Structure formats: structure tokens, C-alpha cells
Amino acid sequence: MTTGHCLCGAVRVTITDLPRDFGICHCKMCQRWTGLAFAAIEVPDAQVTVEGEEHVSRYRSSDISTRSFCRICGSTLWFRDDGRPSYEIPVGLLDDADHLRLTHEIFVDRKPDGWGLAGDHPRETEQDYFRRKGHVPQPASRPASPAEGGQP
Ligand SMILES: [Zn+2]
Ligand SMILES: [Zn+2]
Image 1 (spheres, rainbow, N blue to C red):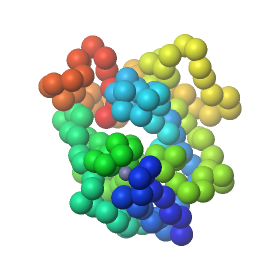
Image 2: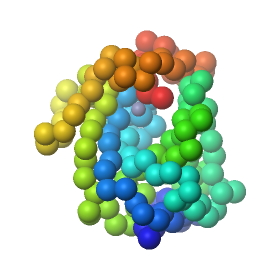
Image 3: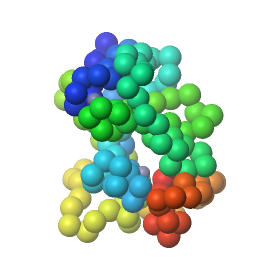
């Protein structure tokens, strides 16, 4: 059993059988959403319990995905793709993340040049990612311009 919560504590998650592997998305949308990069662990719905659902705000960031955040403190909560029954939960939300292991990065060609992560794990560019997924999502019409690109 693993627990986590947003900055103010209004939204709490409890996770059973937390997977050990996590990934990082460097797409421009995730940069804007999180401040730099989205480091997240994907957990199937059945393993996640959310408390404080009434404090969760949702932003439809593309035609296939939704990003949630705490409406009180603004913390990034999770990312969900349509038709994919899982939460992508930020590593930073968890009370204890010491045993987790970074296993992949995506949109590495989108990250600022001035920083990078060590390790010998797979790194996909934007093109690699969309080739694998076979779908280029359409960004939400308002903020993100199509030229910026973005995951999910
Ligand atoms: Zn909060
Ligand atoms: Zn992203």
C-alpha cells in the first residue's frame, strides 16, 4: 500500500501494488503543466483509490487526454488517456518513492538543452513516440498551439 497527496492534502491517493517503473515526459505541454517535466508512474484504475474527488479539477488538454489538478493548491494530480483505464500519477505526489526506477523518457528532443538525466534507459523523440502510438493528438483549441507539440 502506497499513499500520496497534493500540496494542501485535500486530494489523497492510495495505491495497491505500486508498479516499480516510471517514465518522464518532456513534451511542451507537460513542461507547462508541471514546471519542467512530468515524471509519472502508470497505475491501473483497480489499484487506485482517490479521496477528495470534489477538489479535483480537470483540464481537457487534447482530443484524447485529460489532466487533473487540485483546485485548492494547484498540484498536478494525474494524467489520463481516453479508453485507457489507468492513472499516470506524478512520482512527486507519493509519500515514499525511493524504491522506484526511471525506465524511459519520451519527447527528449523537446526538453530544454540545459538539463538531462543520467542512466541507460530508452529515450524517445517526439517522432519516435508518435510512430509507436500511431496517433497524433489534436491539442486543445485554446492555449497550446499545434506547433508546440505535446503528448497526449
Ligand atoms: Zn491540494
Ligand atoms: Zn507530455
